[in-house]
Length: 161
Image (cartoon, rainbow, N blue to C red):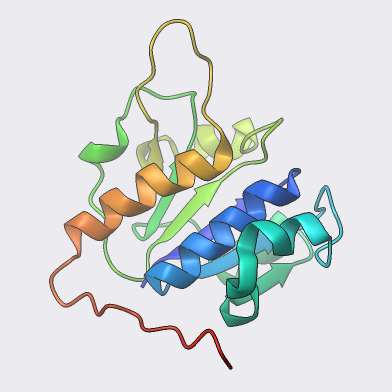
């Protein structure tokens, strides 16, 4: 399905929740170091519940390493508050890379400027400056699913194994 990419995530509960979302959608999760927590942290696993062992997870040593393997192109979407391009105007395809920056820094501005046509944002009221990372991933990923729902196979998870 989709590839969810978290660049330097800081909060283990967000990552655990996003991992659970990925399992339920059949999406892959890519975590880019440095991480703000130990991947074995109880908070990650608690938020991911017993889905964590079912997660298709890849851990990258750096954003540069990830970009060498997966250069930003037509199958990439960069989530940021630094654009006016609304996420629901983006065209998503199966196997796309949906990239989210860390909770405190976002995606490097140099990368955003070099790929402004791939940037998207979630509209927010004037009193807010950003949404929680796990909420943002859910909002955008379910729009991507809506656009690609034909042929989506409901995933049955055997929680006993």
